[in-house]
Length: 147
Image (cartoon, rainbow, N blue to C red; front, side):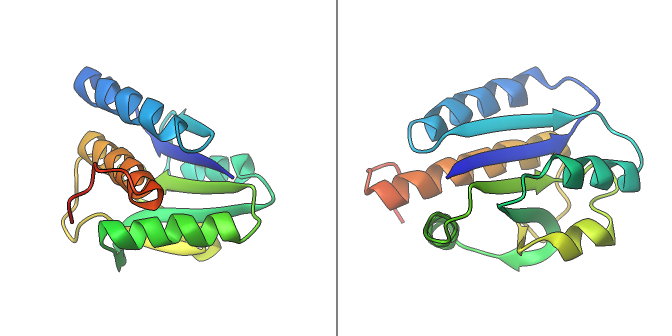
């Protein structure tokens, strides 16, 4: 199974890009990994681009503040379930400034909340990368997580 984290981003955020690159290389030790960045448009355009890029045998996780809250162990269980499902790709999608359109949320197998608060895109991206990496280490029994 491959993991993809995608997001819509217009501006540059060097600190967040550096953190995402670091966590992405760490995730890569556990799963084939890809960081996909889309240029922003309307929420509908962003959603259409996302759905067009999604491989056929994918588990789509939409990141949205109205989604389900999970612990780090819960995210590790999500990785387990996706890996056991036989699907080829676990795709985490961060929305643009106006979030995901209803069609994208309805296409998702999981809607995940990082926080009930609305987070700046760069902050949400780093939190998501770190939590996916943490879930990988929990699954592998590595000492990164002390929960």
